[in-house]
Length: 168
Length: 110
Image 1 (cartoon, chains in turn green, blue):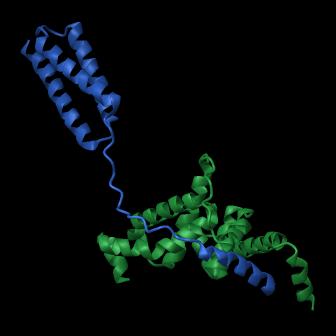
Image 2 (image 1 turned 180 degrees about the vertical axis):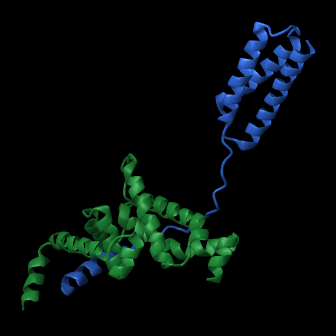
C-alpha cells in the first residue's frame, strides 16, 4: 500500500514498479480480448495509463486487479466502437498453446471473453468478476454458462467423451 | 461440469505462455498545448488592424467608422472567448479591453 501511495504522490520509480508489476497480467488479458499482439500492447498501455491517471481516485474498495480489468474492458469496448485498423500479420513463433487459447476465445463476444478469462485464467470468483465488471452475479453465471456451451462445441470431438464421463 | 471447466481452464491457460513484450516507459500525460490554429491568427490580425484603425481614425463624433469599430470589437470579443488556451484568451481579452477603452476615450475627447 505504501508503494501505491508513492505512485499517487508521483514518485517516478514507484510508478515504474507499479507498471512493471501489472504489465504482464494486463497484457495477457488484453491479448485474450484482442487476439493480436500489437492491439494487445496498445490496449494494455492505454489501460495502465488510465489506471495511473485514475489511481488517486482508487479507494481500495475492490482489488487493484479487478479495478484494472474493469478499465481494460471499458477501453476494449470503446476501441471496438471505433473503425478497426487493417489486419496486421500475426508474428510467427507463437506457442501452439497460445494459439489454441486465442482461437477458443475468438468466437466469444467481448463480455463473455473477459468473463471467461477472469474466471479460468485469472482464477477470480463469480462474485469478484461481478464486482469488477459492475454486473450482477447472476449475469456472470449466465455468461459462464454461455461460455461453456460455446467452448464445449469448440473443444470438438472430445465433448461427447466428456458427456459420457459425466454420465458414468 | 467440472471436467468441462477443467478442460476449458487447461486450454485457456495457454494464454499464460504468451510472450510478453518489454514493459513500456510510461510517464503521466502532460496536456499538450494546443496549436493556436488559423482562427487565433485571424483574431490576432484583426486586433492589429483595429489598433491601426484607432490610431489613424479622425476623432469625430459617433461616425459610421466608430460604430463599425465597436461592432468589430464585439465580434472579436466573441471569437476570443472561444480560444481554448486560457492564458492566451486572457491576454487577448485584455488587449481588446484596452482598445475598447481607447475607443471610448477618443469618443469622449470629441
